[in-house]
Image (tube, rainbow, N blue to C red; front, side):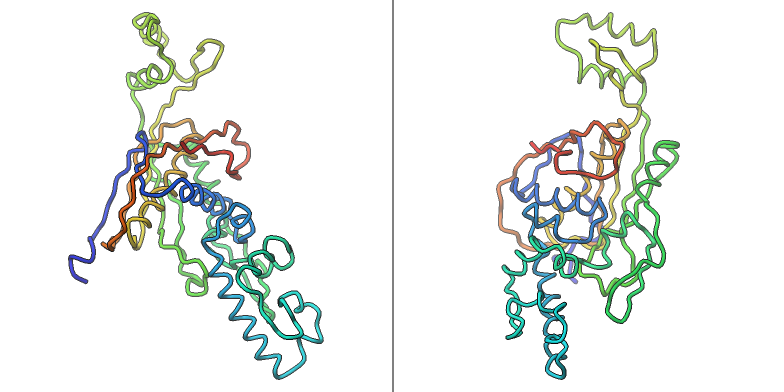
Length: 333
């Protein structure tokens, strides 16, 4: 491939303290948030996506449905399996005529029929299911029904433990790319892994952070600063009947990809990692710092020019007892 078609060792750095400049519209940003939450929660059924107006993968599921139904119909020509078993009737818009659902009918069926959704809305083995269950093994029987033979580890729980006990001890790694059964996966992912690392903040910079976020003009600045120096304790500051936890660390993220296809693909990957670093930093009361996106190469496809929009992404969540995310946890301005 010529130099005009790719940039080798592509790298982009994003400062999380500044608003994101993206060509994506708000609807697209929200759609990516829905996908991130679906992924983070370790889900592999499309029902959650569809309920939140994310239709990005429905064509993949519908194609799988058509292939398998056509195979079933071919088998039916040799026997009366469909007529004999009512189990298959719900898979057709008209089972007597062996008429498949249209894509719109298929989508509506997944939304409204739990039994149909469990079968046809399921992506099977996917990177999303492995993210919170890394190393899982599934055996499939003659009817292609999967049973878990080995439960994996929740690597996000492990990274929480390592960040809590030794935040500056090195990289904290989340794996995403598993070659096992890769060819059979409906959703192909090219994110290899994420490496999170933390930097200590010195006392002066912690004071600056507090002043930037809580100090109001007219207050006795020098007296305030002198009290900080005397106490030398910023872990929990009493401030107008509020306890302020001044961050001790900045959190950074490095994301390594196989390939980034184009500018829109890059922006979606930036969003995914911004959502991740915002959540991690809120969980540990750290300052979200830099995100570095690495790729083997980035294709230089000609993109239609879009107006750049600025987005500020924050997490509203206060209680982190649960490690399951909801849409309401994030705020996009």
